[in-house]
Every structure is written in C-alpha cells, then in structure tokens.
Amino acid sequence: MVEDYIRGLKLRQIRNAAVVIIDNKTHQVITYVGSSSFQDTTDGGQVNGAKAIRQPGSTLKPLLYGLCIDEGLLTPKSVMTDVAVNYQGYAPENYDEKFNGYVTMEYALEHSLNIPAVKGLRLLGKDKLVSKLSACDFRQIRKDQNKLGLSMILGGCGTTLEELTGLFSAFAQDGTWYAPQYIRSGSTPRQVRLLSPAANFMVTDILSKVNRPDFPLNWGATEKMPRISWKTGTSYGRRDAWSIGYNKHFTVGVWVGNFSGVGIADLSGAQTATPLLFRIFNTIDYDTENEWNAPPEDCELRQVCSETGLLP
Image (cartoon, rainbow, N blue to C red; front, side):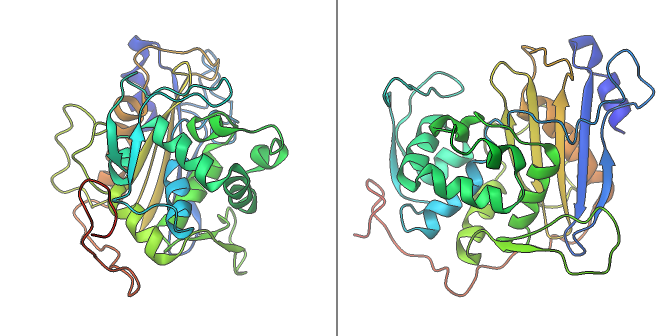
C-alpha cells in the first residue's frame, strides 16, 4: 500500500514514506515500514525513515494543550489572542501568515495555529514539556533540552516517527504512555502518566472533529472509516509531512517526504500524509463499531462566557 501510494506522488517529486502501527491493547508494534520500497536504490529505499530524526512540525501541540489543561492554565474554551508577537527577536507566524484575533484554545488546536501554541508553551514552561517527552524516550529532545526554546512546539526540535507514534498511542490509553513493544517479551512495558484522563479526553475530542482545515481535499472514502482522532504536521521548508491518528484499537503514524531532505512546495501533512493515514485505517479497521472514549467522571460541562471563556 505504501509503495503504491508513493508511486502516485513521484510525479510531484515526493519519493518516500514511512509507517508505524501500534496495537493499543497489546502495545505491540504490528507494522513497521521504513521506506516505500526497500529495493529502491535510487531514492534511498534502504534508509529507515521510521527511525530518522526529523522536524515534527505541529505534532507536539496536542500534548502541550493537554498539559496546559492539567496545570489549570487553559480549558478548551479559554480565549487566546492570535496576533503578532515578538519574544526577544523570535516572531512566530501562522501557517497561512494571517492573524485570527481572539480564538479559543479549541479553535487554535483544530486549526493548528502557531502563535497561540507558542503562547501556550510560554505559559506552561518549556521544561515541563521537555520533561514529559524525555520520559517517553524522545532521545534527541532529551539530548538537546538545554538548547531548545519556544520554537520547539512548531517543530524546532528533532523527533522520529517511532517516538511520535508511541506518544499518540498514549492519547488512546487515557493519557498513559506505554513503551512500544517491538518484540514479544511477555513483560509489562514501562509506562508514564502524561495527562489526566479528563485532559486527555478533551484533547482527543478536539482532534476527532472533521470540520477543520487539515481534512484532505477530495477525500470521499470515509463513510465506513472508523472514528479517529488525528493531528497533522508540516516541517519548516516543507521537508516533512506527518499525520498521526488513533482510536481505541490502533495508533498509526505516517511520514511522507524525501530522505534527501529536499523541500517540496506541494508537501503538507494534510494533503500528503493524511490520505495515506485514512487509507490505512480504512484497511485495518474498516466498518467496525465506533468504540469511543466516554467522558471521565471528573470531566464536566459548564457554561462560560462566549467572549472571555471564563465563568459568568
């Protein structure tokens, strides 16, 4: 499937992909595709793209917002300002180079806005995010922790598809990360509590919505597809396209790009990686019951002011 998918992208000079699939119940890695074709000597088919260190784009934003919820800094309806900012010379911009004014945290995550994410990391503190990622075996981030700044939430750090797929499997496990199992050992995998069940539910619910700009254009084969939550990412220079999704059964991580690191104008997580993600879910979990997380007991609805996001 991966080879066939990339064959259709080669006319656009997009030549490789990698896929990792985790069974959420056993924590076993059940599919591991390092490249679109191992026999392809022209485009680096023997490079392991699942283990290669790449810029993660926006894929760390769900964890950031979940941590902000747990710290009492934000709720999905908290109002943030999406306006021009400058932090000692660092002036982040949104993907479309536009500003949206007042937005809720929920809207910011749905639309993957960059400026609110940087503000969220500034509120939380970079070290708290780095600590959680280091605990989940993000090796390059652990190594570079003293060098990282606010830009890490927009992809200014190094991660792998293995690491990101393992991270998103935690969202399918009520916020608990289990070390992905690459061999059958029979032992209990190491685990780390990343988010409370309530914060995890809120993030998962936001990521399951389909009325968002990173839904693939002209994608019609979703009628029987299981309900999933997913997040896309596109690295600086359009070198890496990410799409990582999950439901109760599986977590699927997809990377698409070129092993040479060449940027492609057409490359994006939404339009390049997500169609492959959807195809995979349509194949491995087609027309199954849409089993979904129920809200935890301590996760309650409350009325807030539509203008401020605060209690009336």
